[in-house]
Amino acid sequence: MREKGFQFHITCIMNQNTVSEIKYVAKDAIYIQETQYGKFDVNISFFESSYFLKQVNTSPYYVNLNQDLFLQATLYSSDPNLVIFIDTCVASPYPDNFRNLTYDLIKSGCPIDPTYNTYYSPSSNIVRFKFNAFKFLNRHSEVYLQCKMVVCTENDPSSRCYQGCLARYKRDTSSYQKKMDVIVGPVQLQRKTEDTKLGNLFL
Image 1 (tube, helix red, strand yellow):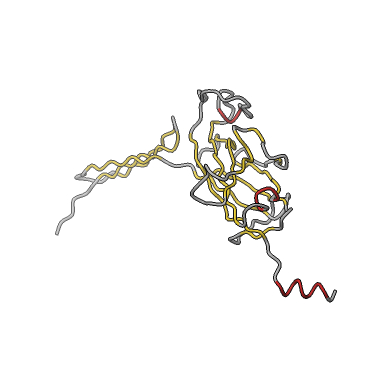
Image 2: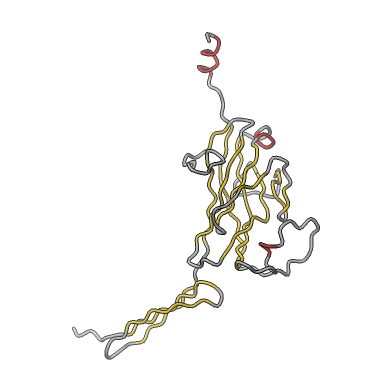
């Protein structure tokens, strides 16, 4: 059976106003065209300390009642001219319900929890922050965190990423590439075993 040659033309549109093309031409071509729109990937991970050197890879993440939690949000994209911003973060005992029984950490870019704090980030595609586990783990044995992330073009003063804290609600007319919700967890309270309690009696 004789196979005809073909022309396979791919256009990948990664971001607004950014197009890359690769073309392969064969004789006696059959023309095929594909257009794909790229995605932004944002990941949020726990780290063991404020040095952000060792990532927590266990799930659930067991913590003590008054322990500080260190998190890093990272944007993965082929476009180096993008930045991320944390608009809102809420804690909930349920991974699929962030409307009831929630505890606000950040709202409209404004820190709500008094233990929330940000850290220096080595790159514009990374945001580092921390908060204390006391408030919500004192009420619930298991907690999930949902953060609304905003991806913007770097050095755009009109974008949501550069507006910062919006104490008063107003209609969102700022520019941005994408908004996305990222969920991380669960975080569980470390419980002392009965053996540990008995062992402490003999110390």
